[in-house]
Length: 405
Image (cartoon, rainbow, N blue to C red; front, side, top):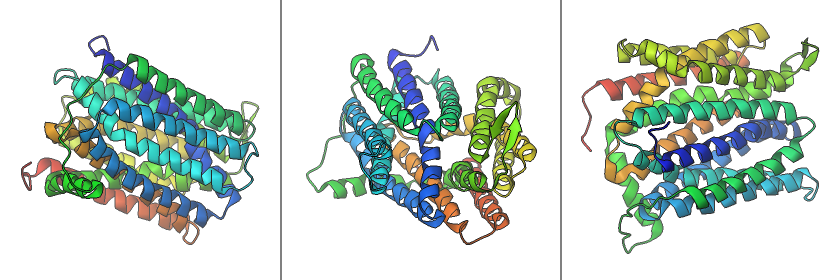
């Protein structure tokens, strides 16, 4: 990391802390909601949040191309922290209605998706062509480390320390805001804003992105295959919390929530320990075969996990999906950047963020479907969508471009 600019280091650090907060709270918040409302309603809440976040992502991409990105980060991080303090107030009994918890959950989703395009554009701007692949490897590595540590913290705190966890999360996010203000020395050129309604400008902004059919096909494919991982913290997580028979391991009671935490920790430990090794191991192999093989392991493994409650099998499957993820994801991240025109960085990255929203929407829909369908059928739903996603990704990367930028 010695070759990284100061702005790159600050952005990676703040992204790590924000992801740590998210990973330690939101997956368990969904389980908490599923305990207090019907599972189908919990799924609807998750999908509604994704829908609102989708719109926020559209606006965020436009703002990041037309406003100072540092200012966007500061305002959105403050709102992000405010969402956690609101949820903490409800958990602490200050508000009796569960609706306030849902409102806080929505604020968190909106804030994150408003600032994510600006964050992505700063990372892209602050890196060079020479170190960009390394920067994205570290971003991927730190994100997974944050999610695994978050899973460990959330799994431990879920039953007895949920209120302190949400208060501490808000405090950490305020600290992140302070670091951005004091340490990030970044200014970006902004595109001239036209004299028309905001949503008209946003539509015109994304019309250019939608004309790039190769990019659109690629991002739809990514959204479909990434959906399988999000089902771990929606459908699979809720199912384990309700159906897994607790066992004693090393004199500790391991229930479904803690098993979910263990699985995420396994994923993170492997990511932390093997990311660079596997990248080195596969760099001489055919890129297309590595991506295809890795994504197949990833999709099929997560699909089978959705209908399995045997701890040993779940651990084996998690090892398999993580290996698939590690060999395929860094290559896809590097190829993604190559498809982005420089003058529309934030809009393209925002569209990539919208793919994440589609992934979460489909994963939330799996949770709703789980109230009406068997686990085996949900596994089929996950695997089929994932395979379609792999096909679209490979088509967009390795066929002649459908249109030029």
